[in-house]
Image (cartoon, rainbow, N blue to C red; front, side):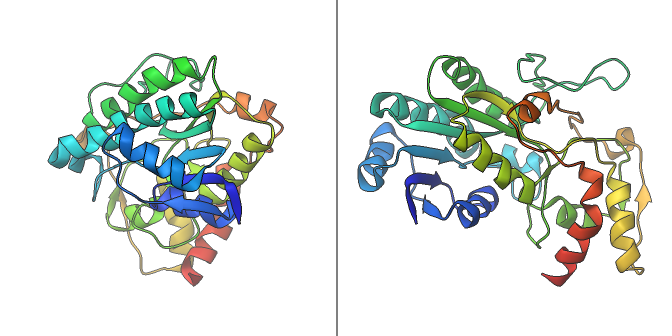
Length: 273
């Protein structure tokens, strides 16, 4: 086991990373700097990967049901960990979200890491932005890596998996979005750690995924599944849809696969899981 790395958070992302990195992991509750300090003294890591976060039980709208908990997990804990990392000469890897930007499909190019065109209409997005604004500034001068992922997809059954989420609905939007394929994400993290990357990186797959395309692949193996396409406006939900740039990730030397190239294998492995 790699005792130099400590993952905080035993959720979807944390457990996926732990399997690949074979490192220490903790889900000890953090409410203060002292709580974080106790964890650091116990594990003595050289690298902390913060996977603590709340996205809502059913969807991001559920973040409204626990405002204090969401602010603690998404906004305050990352800042606490940044402070303890600086004071103890520890590298911090903060897993953030790409769901924090506005995007105009007719006008905008894929969003680069330095964008500040933030999406404030959703509480979940605001809670992530609060931490980002502090940490991204520190990451310019200190040993901090801020990783933005988007709409995780994995080849296993899990409530946080994009495929599992879409299967709950019979009406799906048809808008291209950046997606993070988790088997590729964990490899990207290994690459970024190996080169001691600092600063902000978008970690998504090449291209954009239209959700109906994924569901048609699923339909190929499960013909009984049916769905309809619905316009976003008719859903009546506040959401940000966007495409992130992968140029910086590619420059790191990591080979980024197109999200559409993994769909068939992903679905077949998902059905076997």
